[in-house]
Image (cartoon, helix red, strand yellow):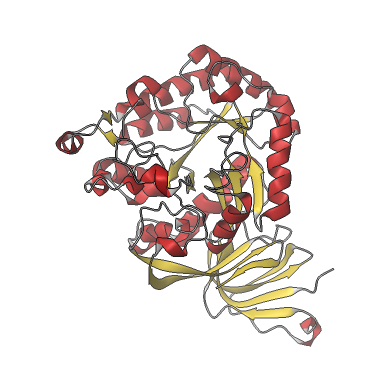
Length: 431
């Protein structure tokens, strides 16, 4: 067994108990063994056989659990591999991420799920889980063998960025998943309205001359999905909400007792439609960036607890796919290393507390997926992040550990530097 690890003189953030204050913790056997809240004394002589790390007053929190990460392996390792994604995640304080099934071929077969998980265990410094495809080939026409995918290790089922247009197929998927008590994760964007769009409908998109999608496309699909949840009793997670119009249906579903949760991308919490003014393709996202009123509404819903989860929606693309006219460029942005400092914008603006931030970025994702992390509790995995929330820096995309560099935050002034990260008590990142 490795020697115990003592992390002292820290500001502990525990979203499970709501604690935000000074303290220390002891790690043994890959698990958190003991928490000391309040002024933490240095370990005594009985702990001389363990390593001691003085955190210097920095924040010590549970490692981030990112529910929505796209990796190019298999099929597009030049964009991102499990190794490079894991290194980027560790540098960003993300100790667990969930890979989406949009690979080549997609993860619609148990053998492919097993391959992805085995490859990740072999090369990634962080914990990696995977979601299986909800329909074969991600085509929305025929559902996959759900039980086989779950037996292979899938933690949930989704078609990633592909919304399932056929209500009959979606209902069949939900009914089967309900019988298995399996989580369905869906992208609530009405496909016919969204097809070919790269901006949100309104005066600004018209001035830019860009094809656009009305914000109501999100609400239309969400309303349909919630009706199917009511019909089938399925567990359902809306992967990324981004509009004010989607919040009322979500609230009604919660009040009705439906088993529904929702997430939001950090990009949609911190950016708005005006950021595409210079036609910079690094800001081309799906769903497209929204009006400032929508962004404000979604931030408020997150703070109030209506939205449960923040995700990076990490989607790497090579230069050739992004260095195109805005309409033709690939959709998506990397986000593993920028996730925490971007989230801290909301903390510095007074919109979220650090406890609420880690509830949404660590505890809630772990709970929704049935994972043991996301908390500073004796017996929990010693998956930890140590960071200075006030440390300023200017992001240079060329320094990112991801193989792809398509970040919308390039040359942006940010605050929040990760000083260290641990998985099962083993240090996987040190600044």
